[in-house]
Image (cartoon, rainbow, N blue to C red):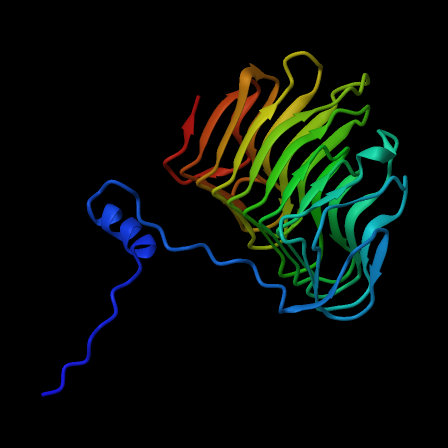
Amino acid sequence: MIEIPMKKPPMRLLAPCLLALAGLLPWHPAPAAESLDSCAGFIDAVPATITRQGTWCLRHDLSTAVASGAAITVAANNVAIDCNHFKLGGLAAGDGSTTVGIKATNRQNASVRHCAIRGFHTGIDLTGSGGGHLVEDNRIDQSLVYGIRVSGDHNRVHGNRVFDTGGVAVSSIYAIWGTADMIDNIVSGMTTTYAGSDPQLYGIFFFGNGTRAHGNRVRGQRVANTNAEATGVRAGGVRQSISGNHVAVVPAGEGWGLVGAGAGTTFCRDNHVAGYVFDGLRDCDDKGGNAIH
């Protein structure tokens, strides 16, 4: 029998493995780099308008000082914007800006992923008569009025982080608003300087028949030093469900934790609600497991 000699692996590769097996180092596979191979094109300057379907990518941080319009306009169906975790900034336009970070109107199947969108009037706006939109794994911060806004049918808003929405003299502020399933999002930090009667802070306000808000966390709606009224999660459709959410105001302040569209049409289960003075659970059928503090 002929023996084939086996080469020993270099010690620089073998040593980490031996240490991991010995319990001295944690063992993790090497992280894979994000590929740009699937990109139909790149957005290298803003404002930009996308007129062809496919995945359009950022490959570096972008910013604009335009005070109206949109930084990125989606003007075709079946377009995905993938920021590859780069920043799209609009802070330079100031508190009077009406600019949208990423906007699509009357379009089908728009997707926005992996974006860090900062300082616009509205971070992401996919509205009009279209639908089939996906807003996923984005960080939206310092939006003036809306963090995320979507409308149409068959939409999903999933795994986003929306921070520090508001801070301007507007009577109603929305971190996430839309006709969609709202799943596993984080909303933290909302306020308004509006001096009129009863300004409203909405963490998540969702619509649509049969949609649900599940696994979301809403916190930091700062109502203690203003006359604002906060709502953690509010439903505005038919046969909706609100489940597994955690909503809290610390310190306690005026507002409502979970608000349904009416008894018999909204169902609430397994939610944790804390700090809302007016009511923890309103206009929603209590299906059990809700903890109201």
